[in-house]
Amino acid sequence: MTGSKPLIFRFAPSPNGRLHLGHARSALVNAARARVSGGTLLLRMEDIDRDRCRQEFETAIFEDLSWLGITWATPVLRQSEHFARYRMMLQDLAARQLLYPCFCSRQDVTHAVAYLRDWPSDPDSVRHYPGTCREMSARQRSERLAQGVAYSWRLDSARAIGAVGRALHFMELGPHGEAHRVEAQPQLWGDVILGRKDVPASYHLAVVADDAWQGVTDVVRGEDLKAATHLHRLLQALFDLPTPTYFHHVNLVDALGRKLAKSHGAKSLSDWRADGFSAADIRALALGPDPDKITGIITHKMASFP
Ligand code: GLU
Image (cartoon, rainbow, N blue to C red; front, top):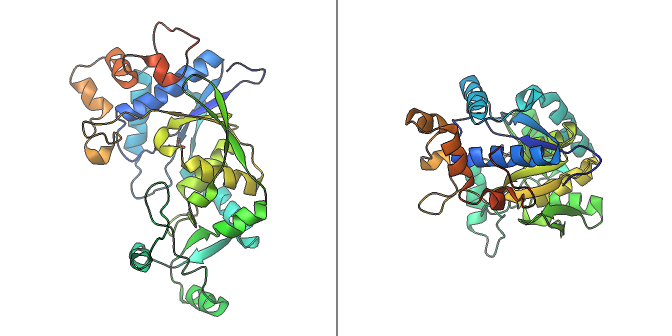
């Protein structure tokens, strides 16, 4: 992992709730990999969702990470402070006719795909957008725009893949540190939303924009986001951005085998703390009995984490 150029990692939580053990695992794996490589760990608040993100959750993230013994380089990037930059990226793609406004509600999309047989689903099991607004006539589109109907911006994925016009690859590190060259399959995602109706960004756009903006060399995140890398690679090519190396760690799961999540009632780190668990206990719970296996760091035996 050690190279001539210092590696830059990031932990990128959304301040829309309290951190749980799954977040602790991600943060600790990032911190451990940054430490053994002599690299830097950055912190990014993925707070584009203005309804769900709150200052108190951001403050709690700082507290929880500090309690775990994790340090990060400043400044902390807040995505909500960078909407102008994301908007420019959307305008760029729109000018190249790789985006189109989509007036559909979620319900419209559900109804439209309900009658389609053998219609593909994305890696998150969401059926691809059926293309209703992509096929809209220029007149219909300008009428809707003139009426002020709210719209999101969707990627015209077929055109975008065509515009890149070559196979794309990224490096994925395996559990034993081995590097695999993976051919990106962005078509798995269909016409994703890159600009939401409420904000000029989406997770996919902002994450790609900011990994480049922050000079991130190594993206370390849960394996639930592994498939998203295929789309992220396409976006990097469209904007001519560098491609980081990826390492997707195993996720912590609950008793039903589901990824730990707030929506499934995962216990927060502050609740663990209130129940008398120490930071060392949490590090052990988050990384399990064989931390080297989770961090993917097998050549370094560390007395403690991070
Ligand atoms: N904000 C995302 C999350 O909390 C992580 C995004 C990423 O690491 O790419 O799941």
